[in-house]
Amino acid sequence: MAQVSCGVGTCCGVRKAMRLALWFLLGLWLRSEGESDERNSHVQALTSAAGFEKFVERGSCSGPRALFFGTREDDPSLVEFHAVATEVQNIACLGFVNCGDLHDLCVDLNLRRKPAVMFFPLEPGAAHLHLGTLDSSSVATGLIGLISANSRVELVTADSVNAFLNDPRHPTKLLLFSSRKTPPVILQSLSGDPELWPHVSFGFVRPSENGVMSMFGVKEVPLIVLQYGSNSDTRRTFDEGMHSAGTYAALRRWLMQVVEDAQRHFNELPFEEDPAGPWADADDSAQVDPTESIWSTAQQGRGTAYTRLAYGEASCPPGFEILSVDECVTALSVLDIEAMPAWVSVYTGLPRFCSVRENTGTNGKERMHFNSAASGQGRSDLAPVCKSQPDDLRVSELSGQSAGNLLGQGLNVIYLRSGRLTEPEVQMLLSLEERFAPYAARAGLPLRWMWLDVRLERKVKSLFDPPTFPSAVVTMDNTQFALVTHEERDDEYLPAGEAAISQLLENVFDGKQVFTILATKKLNAAWSSRGVRLE
Image (tube, rainbow, N blue to C red; front, side):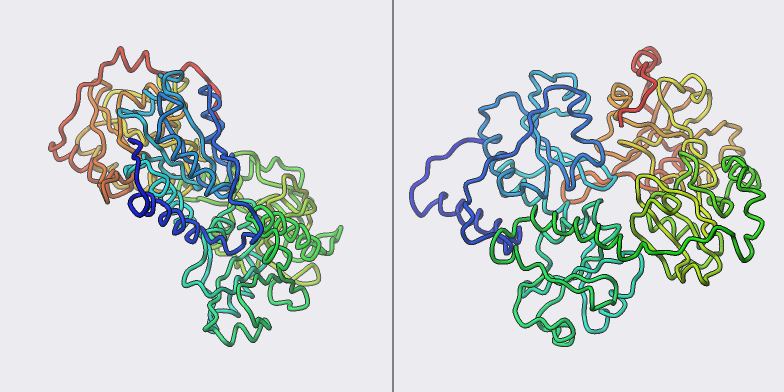
């Protein structure tokens, strides 16, 4: 981007106005009046492919990430990018890749023009290029859009406040009382933080909600109020930061301490040595390898997605765990087991991740339990709930280690994504496999389904060259391929979903699909020889 010399009242005034608008948009109502705007820029220089992998992997940042790809460290656009880092520090992570030093990496990422900025969402999703201008306002707006898309902030009103407080899935309740029309970006960012949202419900209250204001004794805004569930005795306010050092980092540290306090509040559950109720024979099966019970359930039919282990087991085997509260609720629904009331927190004295107490009584009233501690232990009144099959058995992973066994004559459907396959994606692919099995049978063609991690198999990804991810490709006899069609919206390609993949296969079986020659030698040479994940 060319540097422009401008006089007073012209573009410099516009630039200043845009900066002021951006600060307002970021919700810096928490910033101290005495805090200086002179801050150090935080753009991490990535000097190796391994550094890039670590930067983009899930969990490396509590917010979305943006990477600047260029060839000159004195590029004016990079100066603008550093300005973004100053303005969004703590709520997003920014990095710089010199494509002159990491040429192969930039080629693998299909970066045809440089400089360029690529966004990486916090939640599993497709990385994509920023298609706007590379000035600080445009890039910051793109990052803010990613934060807003991942926001879990609820608008709390007089009609919804009781449901908000009594929802047991996230026991700690935070309410921001504010005169703003929409939740500030700082609150949206915190609500999407993977270390906070499993434990904290985030609510936003406008001052027009007189009933809610009166209920919490709020007379002035802005004010942050927090309590555990509907217990008003645990109520506290965030006072220290509202008028002094109220930065994002300070608020996050306060919330992390609150989560730890909540563990002590919620985890005083009694422990009984002897099982009771319908699981009285749990000791007879407690010595059985839990993997065996899972497989026995899985063998009853492929559609069985979840199973309950014996009471007293400590956790599901690796690969069979249910890793989110929402999926835990879904699993219990599939098993026709009542989930509510639920307990969600961090406690090493319970089974790890999803478990259930089917009969409530002296041990507690909660049924579903979700424990996100790093480890857990069995309890005689709780039974872990697991996936019936690990993801990589329900849908095979294609890699340099498995290509010889998976790719064969006929049709191969390859789902392309960055990182691990998610449970909704597994269900989508299994549904498509079932739907198109009759098509393949009538055509007399083998139809195989698999997925590929493009972070591991970058050269294979470059052969297919999709515009974004997730994507999908169908190969025919390993000599030709057809790429799914990606829809466009606002000049950006959208990830391929079930409808797009279904249309691709319908065109293939109807004879309407145009295939591209696939050079077998290039494909064979492109496979990685690595047998481990870049996770």
